[in-house]
Structure formats: structure tokens, C-alpha cells
Amino acid sequence: DTAVSQTPKYLVTQMGNDKSIKCEQNLGHDTMYWYKQDSKKFLKIMFSYNNKELIINETVPNRFSPKSPDKAHLNLHINSLELGDSAVYFCASSHTPGQLNSPLHFGNGTRLTVT
Amino acid sequence: RKEVEQDPGPFNVPEGATVAFNCTYSNSASQSFFWYRQDCRKEPKLLMSVYSSGNEDGRFTAQLNRASQYISLLIRDSKLSDSATYLCVVSSTDSWGKLQFGAGTQVVVTP
Image (cartoon, rainbow over all chains, first blue to last red; front, top):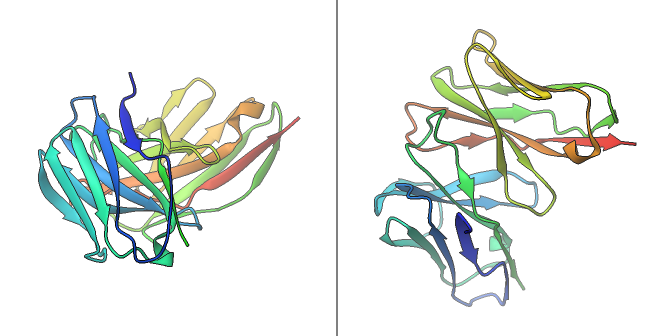
């Protein structure tokens, strides 16, 4: 009965590789997000999709490409991985973004290590 | 200047004591405010939303001061299980869906 699930939980890979992280939510939310939490613990939004439509695209290298096949799924594909991409990536979902009665629900994170 | 700033701590609190800390935000158009809790190597989880008049949830009390642009969190009768990082989260109507996170305040409750 996991609400927001993302896989894999750990990902160790070499520079230059391409990898994907998958996310699925069963909460019936319209909006999904990808956040990056770096070593300094700052959570920064990367992308947000509402009903499969991209609504937020922060200054993220175009090596990162989100894909939302339906509103319950938001995957993240990363090309040509770099050392600086090492971080924890969190998927999240919500109803109406930013409203008091619409908090974010996070997945348990994917810890990406690029060697 | 960061949009959301927090004292990183750590706040070392004896069990049973009260601890309080603030979070300041720079965007006066900010409309929604939240406190999230993040345990080590875990995902953030909503602790409570912050309402204009302030609100309480058990041992936790949140306040909003729009004039000075800060929110606060007070924890009474601290438990060992309250040890975590508390993230301040702010959203504004002019950034649809973009919640701004603070870097967090670490609280360590000691026996």
C-alpha cells in the first residue's frame, strides 16, 4: 500500500553511463515532482508535471529528461552521468500544488553514486 | 539571499524540555507554509501545515508572522524520537507548484 514508490533505492554507476529512476504514486494526485538533495541537504526542485504536462523545469542540465506516461508515473532519465550528479533524488506527488491542504508526499529516495 | 533560511543547529535539547526555532522567508507573496520532518537517510514527511492564526498539533505549535516574514516551530516535552531535521517549506502564488525548502534545523534530543 505504498503511496509514492521509486526504484531503485540505490544506484551506483560510472561516469558517462545512462540511467533511469522510476516513480509511481497510487494517491490519485494530479501533480508529481522530482527533487534533488545534495550533500548539503538542500532539497531543490528539478521538475514538476501536472496531468502529464510539464509545468516546472528548473535550471537542470538537459542530460536530465523526465517522462510522464500517465499522471501516476514520473520517471527520470539521466544521460552521460557526471560525478556532480551524485545525490539523493526524491520523487513526490500532491494534489493542488502549494495549497495548505495539499502537502507533498515523498518517495523514499534514490541514492545515486557516480564513480 | 536564500529564499528560505533556517538556523542549521544542531539544537541539543534535554528530554522533556522545550525547543523552538524559526524560519525566515524572503518572498512577501508567500501564501502557504509547512513544517516537514526528515530523519537521517529518509524522505521528508509532513509534520504540519502552518495556518495564519497559528496552530497546534499535540506537542507541536506552529506560528506565522507575516509582518516579519517568519514561521516558527515549538516542540514541548521533547521526546528522544523528536530527534530529526525540521524543514521549513514555503510556497507562493507566483510560483505554481514550486515549494521552496529551507536547509533544515537539526534537533537532537538527549536522555
